[in-house]
Image (tube, rainbow, N blue to C red; front, top):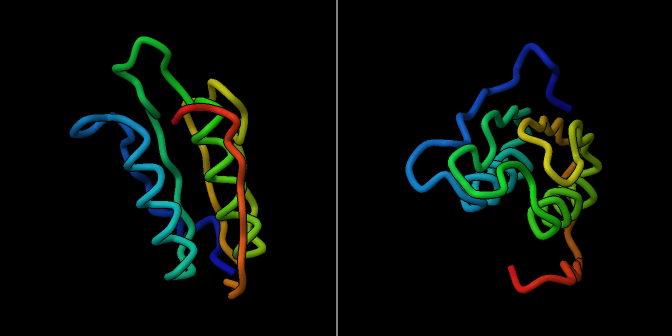
Length: 99
């Protein structure tokens, strides 16, 4: 498991500043076993922070790797993910939104 000292910090407001940076960084963190911190999540959007679909995706990734997700709340503008052991198998997630 990654330690808090090994966290890579990602600025979530860069480029288009949407949910894609969350999906990519969380997925790579789980695969590589490296802890991440994402700040300024969706900072330039009308509704900044996590939306339900982003949160559900992050929770799914955390479950897939026995990870610890901190700041995982709707409207959070900062999260951290400490991945554990990545598991294979079939996983599903219903975001209950159009996103």
